Image 1 (tube, rainbow, N blue to C red):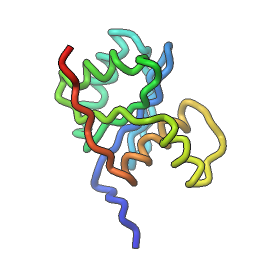
Image 2 (cartoon, one colour):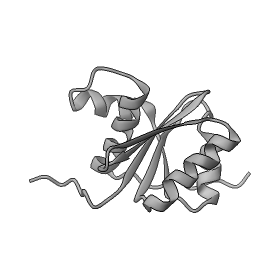
Image 3 (cartoon, rainbow, N blue to C red):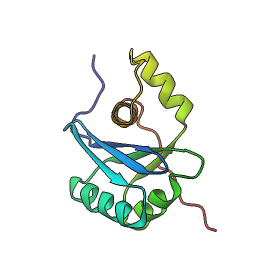
Length: 124
């Protein structure tokens, strides 16, 4: 029995110092944004109308924090994920290749399959 819920929208974001690579599952849309204040705002404008079930971003040495804080403020359902778990999940599904677009795809698939809890922003 397939337990994946394709009515859910899971958005995977691969983060680097330069970019946010965004993949929308199951629609298959891919978009890249600069990992800057303006790029983060543009990414949120892109994501918001999709009404995602969860927006998943890897914990990458705090490079994700700008997006996470802005997305939380915008009321998006954000999960900060352990990159080791995502990589293990990708390998378990047979994916050995690694590119920013494939990583974003794997992050969204991880969210759809495992439905991790949302991450709560901790007070400063």
